[in-house]
Amino acid sequence: MIEVKNLYKSFEDKEVLKDISTVFEDGKTNLIIGQSGSGKTVLMKNLVGLLEPTRGQILYDGRDFVRMSKAEKVMMRREMGMIFQSAALFDSLTVLENVMFPLDMFSSMTLRERTRRAMDCLARVNLVDAEQKFPGEISGGMQKRVAIARAIALNPKYLFCDEPNSGLDPKTSLVIDDLLHDITREYNMTTIINTHDMNSVMGIGENIIFICEGHKEWQGVSADIMGSTNKRLTDFIFASDLLKEMREAVTHNPQTGV
Image (tube, rainbow, N blue to C red; front, side, top):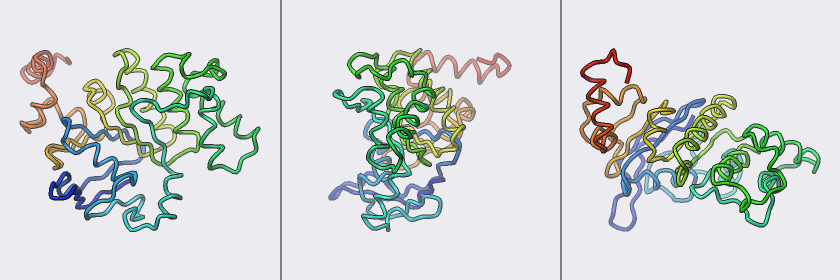
């Protein structure tokens, strides 16, 4: 569990995060949503230590990340997995070597053990047959699955995903969503996902934090969104005419199951 208490972040005289308090739960897909410039990316960067909060607390299972020394933060990051928007694979390494990279850097396993662990992770994302390929030889969706395999190689307690569906077609995005959801449950991780993808919000949003102009405007689950009376949330979620029509259909006739 990650608990955020009264978090503020300013850049010179501009306050970007304003008194955010929330809890990201174990074993659930926790989503951070909001318009571009709302502060959600700054929030995630504070959570992983890429930025230092102006004030407030970030507690990892009761451990105050903000007050840790540099060496303690380095140790904490070994408990974190990261999936970047661009997948961020090493072009000169094979798929297997990419997944082995964190194991080579941070584990004390033998080469045979590291290889076995990396292959197990590739099997978990259904990519065993791609082990000797290079990133440029596989599709964008496959690259994202390699990134997921690499992120779970060290069996992290906390998994951070920055726009994992960026650049993917809707069908592939659903595959990535289902994989992240299943892995979160399987490993009982605290998974935090920054996303603009409304399919992700409605499909795997077990704990959703909506950030608006640096504030936590709303928090809930996907099932609560259809009936929400928070205008800022509904204006953001139902920006398209199609989604507005879907919401109106459910609101006026809950038995439709739309």
